[in-house]
Length: 501
Image 1 (cartoon, helix red, strand yellow):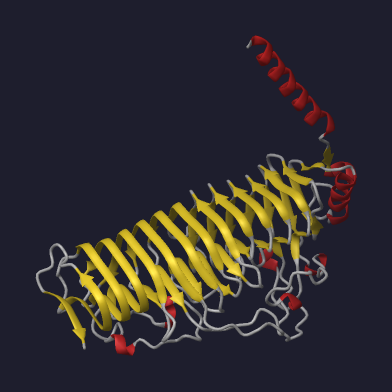
Image 2: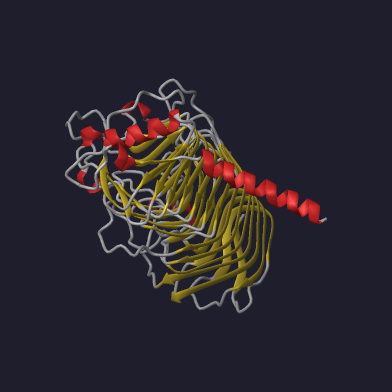
């Protein structure tokens, strides 16, 4: 046994020796970079990366100080490492971010150009880690600086990786992107851990966009954004699948955690757990006309075709968003390229949500909705609490479910409807919906019916707590509901169910 232990110790020592012997550091200052914001370091940093790549890989080190740069391009086996106090600052001149050649993987609006502070296409084994900051300096960039008027948007992202594999981004603070902060498009095996994002300087300031990518882990991170927070998209033909999001704190003026809107390739096997959603600490005015507390906590959307299935959400706390939960199957049917097929309405099914509490929220009611002939299916909610503001009066909300327009072509978010006629949950065009353990309350009296269902087959609602301190005549109402069972809520003294034939 002692002999085996000695052999193991020797092998471990030799392994560490070899790693140290062959790993190389490439300090950007040795290639001419200077921590002076009057100097552009694009050439120097790219030279360090190219030399590192040519040597077989290693660390390109950004030391303490602020280094201004235009686009830098990551290559295979390069690890960009930030020392304590190191900042990569984006140039204020849009011309320092030249358009990249059109990527092999096509996605929506790529013909408008690919611009980024850190860029890679087709690279493998790349990492950005350390203790420093990537500051996009995006408040100085405008959408169409040349006034071409053709939809051009030359704003750069902080990070854009296309068709890359084995990616690790850890410990970095991201600030002030001119548009989306991090965009991982058609990538595989991505780990994003212990990052901080604060993005409130421009329109479309998402925190992180996972787009048509596979095997992705986002964990232990803090996001605070003007636009969407953690966003799963499918803007091309590839699905976003096998994604784990855990232990994150997310704040957004728009949608905190969202799958959509673009959904062409679909979403499969998504796990969201142990997350906190709370109001932004930003005091600035939102770029869009949205509530400061945000639009939604969690949004699941299929509106451009595609399939969403295998989604689990658990242990989520939501404070102060307008709408806690928004599940939407629509039919916007937007193509990702001019020649792409127009998809039929997609499929949204097999979603399990448990242990979710939402409080101090606005009055945009949580909803689960499809469109006529296309149903949201197999949705389970368990141990869910919705505590809204209330205080509405007649005229502040849609009077009846008949007044809720389909809006299947509209941009999918609760602002399209405003205040629905239900105060707790609105269900329409759905099959097999189970709610087991539901607590509803309002800080101020809310006259709306707590739960409404329309065109729904297979509905079970049990283990409910809801006082009848409301003008509503019944707890549950609707039309075209079959195969249903709704328990009497604890504390409810009025009529439980009232359905139109």
